[in-house]
Length: 282
Length: 80
Image (cartoon, rainbow over all chains, first blue to last red; front, side, top):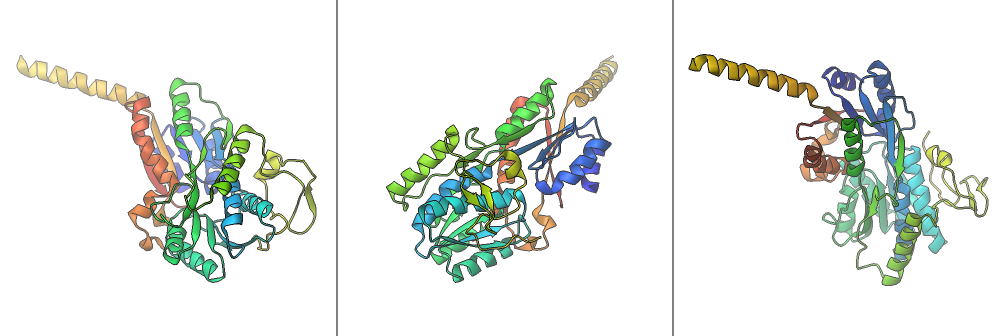
């Protein structure tokens, strides 16, 4: 909060606070400095001078699940998570549901690091997951360390937030690439034009805020087509990654057959779906 | 006479600079600094550059300049 207040006192007109963890100090900043325009990433509280923006990262996980479910030989995917917040949990659930749709025997082993950025811990987690039998890695942390480990140990992995193929030319099967820049440009333009308003933006494959890196040629064409079809159907609105029947991990019902999750459900998601064996730290 | 002209030009330039500065939007990005992490000693710039937010911000600098040639952008590390 002190850093943000310092920025405000330094005369900044527009401040992008680019992480969920900045939500509370951003709210405080918005009330203390109503003349400043604030853009808060991945949060859910807005004020007259503070917008929220987010990316439907989970949409990118569907193609990864479809690929992982069919490329694994051990039926085990290792997943490195940052914080146990809805954004991360959604991605895990979306990937698992997609993987299970093509491989009913799939298992996910999940490790929580409680950090977005911790290269040594990410590396250690990757090594442990592989030692435990995972032959494909997924991650929702920010560095390329898991990809490097996958490359070194000869397993597959998916890049996170950007194309990490440079770190795993043999290992990377694909990646999600988050595209914040067009949003930033538009919002700054709105500010300069005097047309900025407090809004909520949550773009996905349809708005190209999340893109899918090229598929590895190690993936059989049949699987590439299947994954590509899912991407196309999500983009066009014909496929929702969370379509029932889906039960929660504890066996209770969540979505009935054909029912899709609301954005409200997704934004507050705090549980694993049935079939995931890990726990969500409280 | 030359001195007077020089001072007039300098004063005008100063006022122009002040006037322009008042129109310049200052934009800050607050992001999670690797330096905020106690294990940051293990990081390297290539890994940092691969962080999606960093990539976006690097890409934004010239793009912001296109929107507003005088736009100020700041990359301010901030611990959570």
